[in-house]
Image 1 (cartoon, rainbow, N blue to C red):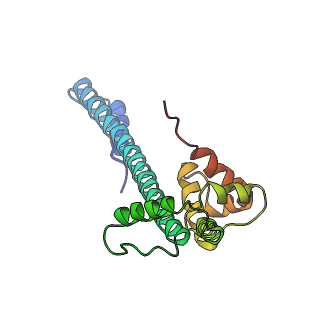
Image 2: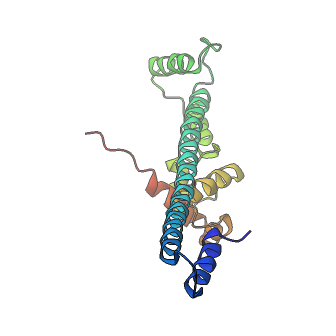
Length: 192
């Protein structure tokens, strides 16, 4: 289907060259008004398309942030569980309640079990959403991302680069670059 603006421009050019067209100036004025309206509508459609794209990017960024927070909480719960292997208190119920009971239990025992600390560190390093320790280790070249961490990090990098890089382009830059990008964009908020 042809753009109506093209058809209108063609019609206008025919009106201009028509030697004996009655009310020619009126026709030209009407054609120009229609052309101006069509141009405004085309511009509005372009702006709306951009608004939709921006909204989709904002939605994706919000979903990623939500996934990150959920993943971090899940990692904290798993780490706390790993750090308290001998915990004998409540194990059923709301996760936050149980986590707080585990923290109380750990604090009452001084938190000195080296095996628990090692298990907690391992849980942190293997979590599907990489935390600061994982990112710093990848940047330093001490380790690579796990498959799950790499998948999440690629998704996050796509959002952070505003969809300007493909996963392949991101991977070509290397895991240390990827980890640095994520760490730089997740700096701890200031507590004023």
